[in-house]
Length: 413
Image 1 (spheres, rainbow, N blue to C red):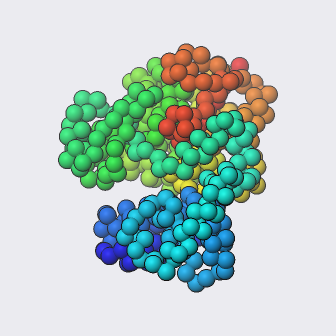
Image 2 (image 1 turned 90 degrees about the vertical axis):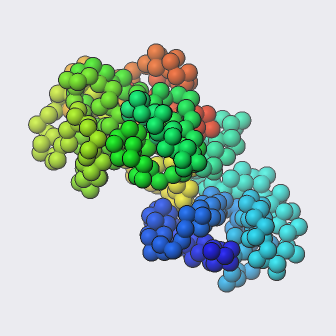
Image 3 (image 1 turned 180 degrees about the horizontal axis):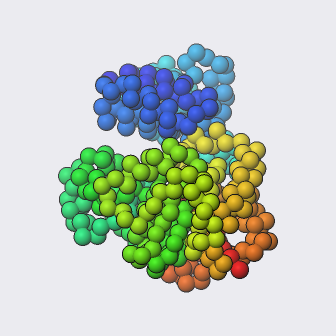
């Protein structure tokens, strides 16, 4: 497809996303489904510009206001031009906008001025930066923000090591490499995006797509032996699948989620992959019969998802500060409810994919006043060479190259 048509697609798609009422990935997925004629290279080009503009939205809009001075009908074209000039530097795109080239010096002059402010330089809302300041030092803030504005790696978890060589061959045929991750023992990067469902080894359950951070928080549970586990917010089931592989044959993972659609998706994911140590709990009534019986309860709590900003940059503009309080209240309710399923002497693992203190430390501070106390697993932190303050596991993209996760392991006294 010619470059002019691709730019028109970028403009059309961005205008659909720009109201920030729906997740960008869903809007993009629907857009591509209706346009089957767009090839993989076309989609890659469109996505590069869409996500680039979303990540740098605040900066680009400020530059647009200062350089173009008035609101024009061509605002999306102008934003694309500014983004391409500063970040992408695609000559074909540049050649489409001859009428704007006389503004280049002005654009760079204003860019230099604006980037003295990290809020504008990295395009984050001021309230969000202030929240980040509670956990990130001034000396590391720019590195942290830069990592959030970078694309996340493609990470998988190897389930059947005996097929590792076969998987490498299959990926090499698609011009992709398999690279070992730094921390989690079963985590590997795939060097480029490939269509995993097309790979027979994926259908056979040889590997699962799972961020290394998600793998690490699962390992943080300490799950082993013939224990009985409840994954109370199982969602798509990634952590439940991994937990089932960490325990012995007589152990069992019970998976439940209040969202029946998610559970149905999990059931489909299980088909034909040979997971024998997972039992799906279909209803709350069925689950309530199991109170005070679990050695370990895992709560992957619904949260703002701020730890996934590098995958979902539109979260910068869809999230509001009041969302944190809303989520933290729900998290407290969930913790109090599912704590009743932990047997005496058992453990509870609380996880979020959020950086915000109010969804993590504050929630646990309130909760641990009950008969639960935080476990400081020194052995875990030494094994993986990860820093902690009070026993919490915090993972960051700029340090661990994972999504942002926070986890606490608690024991029922």
